[in-house]
Image (cartoon, rainbow, N blue to C red; front, side, top):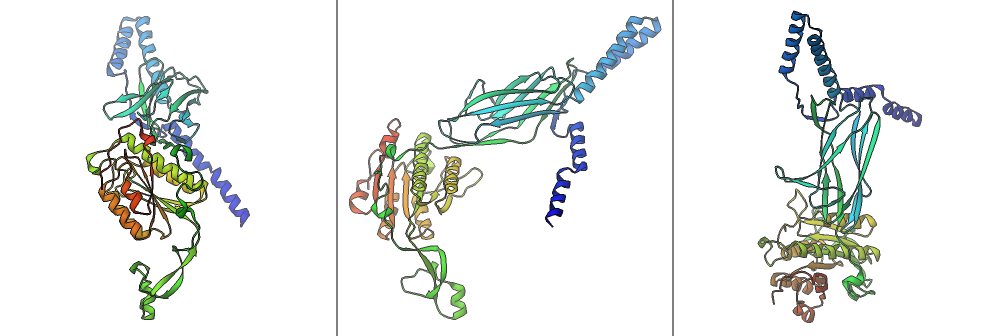
Length: 447
């Protein structure tokens, strides 16, 4: 069986029909999306050639007849040159890194390969680049027609020549950034025919938010989330059901096992597996104004996202299970972000990728989302709330969760700390105004 599979994979890899189809696509130019076929050649050239031929034969003038013949030969060569200009032509982008942090730089390499005997005396490539990522060694120009960035390069590849150019991209904006598609313009060496095509496919790089260390956040090195949050304690993990038991008066309706209840004709609840693993859930408030529909302060939002990413990195470094809840949305979605806790390095990558993709538009009020999400989260989880502004509604929601026994740590970038939460509750408050000293932070609404 193993040998048959090996033979099958080998036949698929070296399938002559597939290779023939790939060669025919190359010959027909189907590897590119043909946009336009501009040309300087028109019917007037044919009429001129016929006229010169007729006059040359009529007057027995070798010069005119030869000129007509040269014109036809030149047109034929230019046409064939243009038709095969895209054959064996490859354009690729190579990135030194597909993922980077804010403030870093990556290298982008543009490669052109002309794998045929015919040279290309001119080749212009207009590639789509992000407008908000500056390129050292080149310029990204705004195309006002579609509001995209264009990066123009000019090449002259010879027969079977490979040309490479390197540029430095400065990662100055968090997010998902797409490169491509590109538009390739080329043609014959006489300038009679022009051809324009677009190779399919795009590239993407992800720029993570800036991360702060524990020292930069000015958190305690030993217990950055407080002693209660890091103390090992026994609690039930609602994600791990081990059986059923009789219903108790303190059980919520979400704990009732309805199928077992119907089968045994008595009210039964799920029995959860005990766990000693501390769990953290980062709750990020994307809104930077008292009312999220009033607008957004982009720089304040970026600092809050950086704090959220830094807390996730600290948790993973300390082998703490961490998840993410945010009232921000991803591109093409209108749903808030929810990620269950985990403590692997892949979990940190997932959190950073979600934070990188967060848009500036909030999906709703963070206080409402906290109250709705709280019953779905593990009871022993500590909520790490990150916000740039603390409103009366948010403080009321935190007080309600605190009275219900939830462990809460608040990280605020507001100008003044919410003193009422510090003195009247068990909520641990970290005031981080030093992260936004160069910005105008929104004022806290007093309780």
